[in-house]
Length: 140
Image (tube, rainbow, N blue to C red):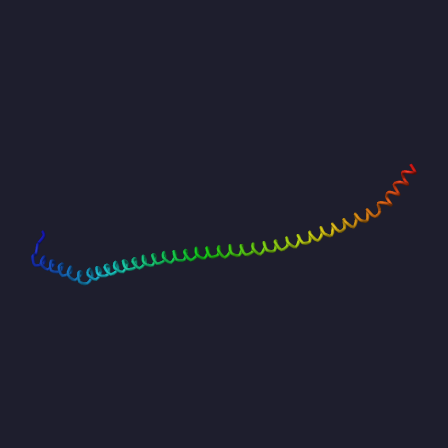
């Protein structure tokens, strides 16, 4: 049936151990070194990525702060321009108001003078009206 040969078993055992040793030296150790190196590289890349992300967040916050400051400055500039425009408009309105008021005073003076001259003209013609009224009444 089966013959067990110790020398062949020993040879197979020696070949197996030699194969394990050679595979360990040639394949497993370099493969493990590669895996460790790759794991370290991935860890470094992840850390660098986190630094870049945090740096990006800082830059984003700075950019947002600059934008907010610019908006506030723009609001101040706009408000200042509006206030200056209101001052100019108010001064123009005040000047026009004074001009219209002086023209109104001139008009009222002219109107008063015209009224006085008309009154004098009517008073000068009162005797003629009386005579005309007396003649009309006498005819009735």
